[in-house]
Amino acid sequence: MINWPKTNDVLGTVNRGNPAESGLCTLCRADCPGKCETWLSSLRGRKLLYPRDFGFVTAGADNTVHLGVSYNSLRINGSLYGAKALPKGLSNSQDDCIFPNVSLETEFGATVKTKVRIPIMTGALGSTFIAAKYWESFAIGASLVGFPIVVGENVVGIDRDAEIKNGKIIKAPELDRRIQTYLRYFDGYGAILVQMNIEDTRNGVAEYVIEKYGDKVIIELKWGQGAKDIGGEIQVKDLDYALFLKKRGYVVDPDPQLPEVQQAFKSGAIKSFARHSRLGFTDSSSWEDVFEKFSKHIKYLRKLGYKRISLKTGAYGMEALAMAIKFATDLKLDLLTIDGSGGGTGMSPWNMMQTWGVPSILLHSKAYEYALILAKKNKKVVDMAFAGGFAHEAHIFKALALGSPYAKLVCMGRALMIPGFLGSNIEGALYPEKKEKVNGNWDKLPNSVSEFGSTPQEIFAGYYDVEKKVGKEEMQNIPFGAICIWTLADKLAAGLQQLLAGVRKFSVKAISREDIFSCNRETEKETGIKFITDYQDNIAKKILKA
Image (cartoon, rainbow, N blue to C red):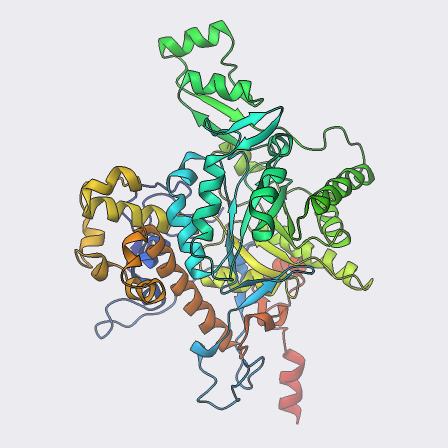
């Protein structure tokens, strides 16, 4: 087992808890005073691309040991000459071939293309209360930057104010709030996806969304995620709410309707209830039967009027992976998100998360292999998003390269939530009258923030960039969490541009598997990416013999 370092002296960052491969703590707190790399990048932006204390220091890379098979065991392959995929209007001159000119715009979709400014998207932010509390920051930030955001499962089902008549939704205020918040600043880049599980399908989420929002929303079907292999969960601490969810048709554990459970709750022996979703395809016994049911559902969604449909699958084995890729390709879905183990959670069982499923790099490597089989049969393979433990620009580069040309986006969960928490905490501390509204957790700014200033203009490196986009008057309506998301996205974008310029690719669409190599033989075997000293070794020897 690799123990990832808790501190990075070069960047001046430190993890509060135990860091995972992503660099995020395994347990990320909304009230955290800092300061991991993602946390600090949400304030200082692209400054975090460089060592701290310029003029007083020199810095060297640490001796990272590339053990085992992980994204850490892939490295990026720079190039000495040339320039490829230059944006229109640029030449291959040294004045044009600079990293700020690298285009990060991309798109996905079978027929209708969805444009994206930076090749990232959020994970599914669903019925967990933390997603609801910070939604304005998440949605407005994503909308301003121009990347997709996903409304996760069960948002309608847990909403006490939602009205369901004859088994179908007729009123869904929380879902409406989420969609409308994103669309408020939508300018043609990015998208909002609404995810459905078993309960959402039964409740008529698809029918409600298409009738009210038309083709402004992408509908997403959920098979699973990287953090668990059962349905979604939340935890509630109110007996009446637990009973409400039970009546809504959910699995609630322990059962709040049992007298002995109610007695235990009232005495304090039981303090909370877990609400679970149902498993899909339990009445199927073969992949052919699953395809028949899935195909029927897709046809129904098309008939309703959906022009864009996506699928989210989890860290299941190879059969399920092949099913997801083939079904999504044959049915002309617009996006397939493949979430490997190592992905984050709002409330997945901890030991399940630790022990189930296929690790991200292995799952994504097989996804490329299986996509290639379909491509050789002259099929247009579904566009993919890779998910499962990604947080910084090198992760984005490596995942896109590993899955090239089929991977179009990198799905980031917790990393894109951290700036939402941070900005809300700062806003609540600076303006106490807003603290409850923005769900701030601080009474005053910690030293980790106040060292940068005492006003939002001083604290956020991206403040004036956002102001330029929305205007000075509109800034009063922009939550600080959204400014943090913009600032983090700017850092990720600049870092990705630098990495792409280093491989002489001036468009993210041109990234390829030749832009990375493996640092050990096991990684080479599992990913199909050449070992670091074997790549171009034949060319090197030709040069020497010339």
